[in-house]
Every structure is written in structure tokens, then in C-alpha cells.
Amino acid sequence: MLSDQERAELEKGLAHYEKKKTGCIEALRMVQKFRGWISDECLKDIAQYLDMTPDELDNTATFYSAIYRRPVGRHVISICDSVSCYTVGYRDLLKHISGRLRIKPGETTDDGRFTLLPAACLGVCENAPAIMIDEDVHTGLEPPEKVDPILERYK
Image (cartoon, rainbow, N blue to C red; front, side, top):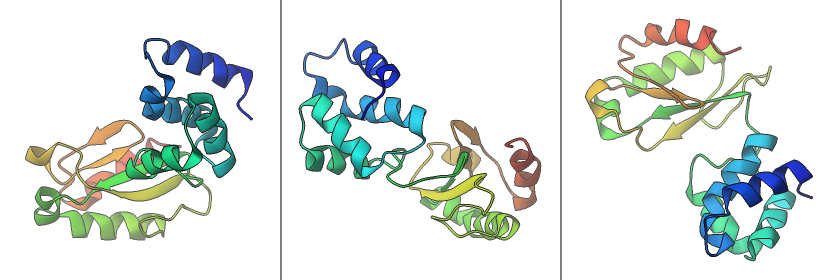
């Protein structure tokens, strides 16, 4: 069930759309902001609000990597695995982050602090390799140890 606060946010955020379902990505992001991820039950509630079927909304939700369909850590690390990042240090950066946090891509640290996810492209090829933590992009992470002080900032 959507909370009153979530419904108010949706009403305000989707007011400029002629049809509510046109704003489905925005609606998913708004509710995710409150809950951290979109459960199956939550997806059904959002779909009903948008006059969509749950399958229609799930097709959209699973297409976008920034919509989380399972629980994630307090901070999500998206590691760019595009061709540019791959050729200038992705493998070493991934190995370093995985070793430091003791997780593989798709996993969350035991303390729930970080989830590590691949990203097809962060759009900063000229400064590869790169990661994004939450909404913050960090570039030029060669050598991979440059990521250590960055990780410390996210508690």
C-alpha cells in the first residue's frame, strides 16, 4: 500500500503528465526514494495508481538499472563496464572493490552498507575508469586504490 506521503509525492511529481502512466519511471524513482527498492507488492500498488498492469510496469522497471527490484545497501556502487572503462582499468578496479568490500557484482556487504552493480555506461569515457555511488560520479580511478578514500566517505 502506498503511504499518504508517497501518494502526495506522486500527485505532485506527475501532475504535468497528461496520462499518469507516461511518468512511470519517475513514479518508480519517487517511491524507491522512500523505500530503497521496489518490491513486487509495491510495484502492483504503483501500477494500479498509474492505470497500468503490473507486467507493463515491471517491464519498464527491469529495463532501467537505476530501479532496484530487490533490496540494496544504503549506498549503491555502479561500476562502469563500458568499452572505455574496460580497456583502461575496469578489471583491476572491480577486483580491488570486490576484495575490499568482500562482495561480487550483484551482492551487498554483510553490514548493508554497499551493493555493487555493473553499469553499461556512466557517460564519462574521457575519464575512465569510473564508478557512481548513489548519484555521485567518481572518475579517473587508476590506480584502483584511488577508490579507497572515496568509499570511506559513504557511511
